[in-house]
Image (cartoon, rainbow, N blue to C red; front, side):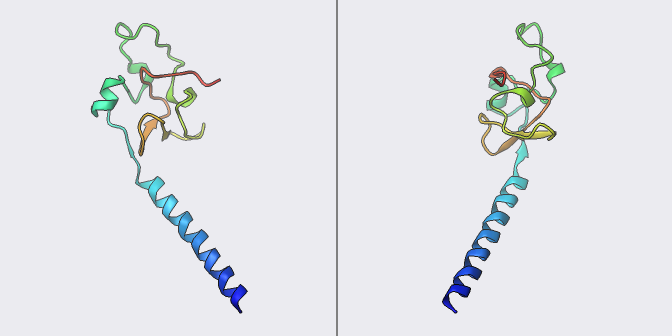
Length: 102
C-alpha cells in the first residue's frame, strides 16, 4: 500500500511541475523595442528595419533565430534570449549583441 501511495504522489508532483513550467512559458511577453535594455542594445523585432548607417556591420541574414543567444526553436516565431530574461524576442529580430551560431 505504501508503494502505491508513493507512486501516485510522484506522478502528481511530475504533472504539477509540468503545469507550472508550461504556465510560466505562456506568461512570457515579447520584448518591447522601447524597453531601456532593448533600446540600449538597438533591438528591433524586424532585422530589415536596422539603421544601416548606425550599424554598418549588420547583414540582412543576421536574425535572432541564428544567434547564439537565442533559445527558441528554429520553427518558432519567437523565443527566449539570454539577454532578455523572462521575455521573448522575435525570431526575425536583431540586436547589437548578435553572435552567429557556431
